[in-house]
Length: 222
Image 1 (cartoon, rainbow, N blue to C red):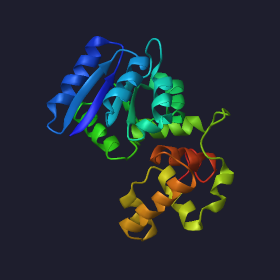
Image 2: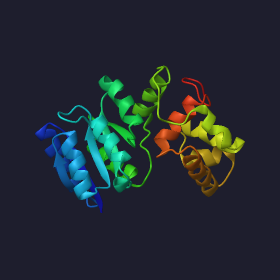
Image 3: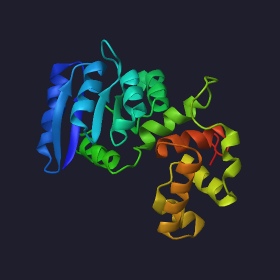
Image 4: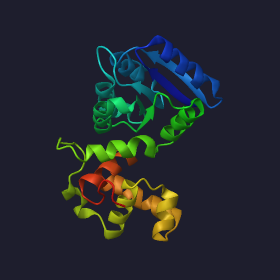
C-alpha cells in the first residue's frame, strides 16, 4: 500500500485529493497538511511514501518544505511530488533544486495523478514532457546558481555514462536508452545507478538538470 500525504492550503482541494487517493485500492491517504510546516511535521510523524505538495502555502511554502524533507536523513524514503502550473515556473525551478521528484499540473486527470503517485513511489522521477521539459529548458537559460553537480563532476564518468546521461536529459526512458544504445535494459539501469552515485544525484530529475548544466544537452537540440 502506497502511503500519501496531501499538502495544500485550500481545504476543498486538499479534501478532493484525499478522496481521490483513497479511491485507489493500492493507495491510502495518511494525512492532510494546510501549510508547509504542517506537511513537514506530518511527514516526520507518518513517514509517507509520497507527499503531494502544493507550492504556494502560508507559514512555510512548498519549496522550503520540500527542501526540509529531502534534506532530512530520517525521511530519505519520502518522495515529494509538486503540484504546479505553467504560471508558477519560477517556483517550480526552485522546487526541483530543493529535491522534488517530479511535477504535476493541477488540471491533471484523476487517473494520471494516481499513476504519477505510483511512479514517484517506485523511485522514478516524473518527467512528463508536458511539464518538466519546458521547465528544464527555461531553467538552463537562467544564470542562477545550483546545488546540483557542476560539469567538473562528470570527470569520473565514462564515455558511455555520458551518452546515457545525455539521453536521460532528453527525456528517454530506460527502455528507450537501451534501444538507442543497443544494450540490455539491465545494462541501461546499471549505468543510471552509477550516474546517480557518481553525481550524488537524488533521482532522475537531478540527472536531467546535470545533463543540461554540463552541456551534454542543449535546449531545443536533440
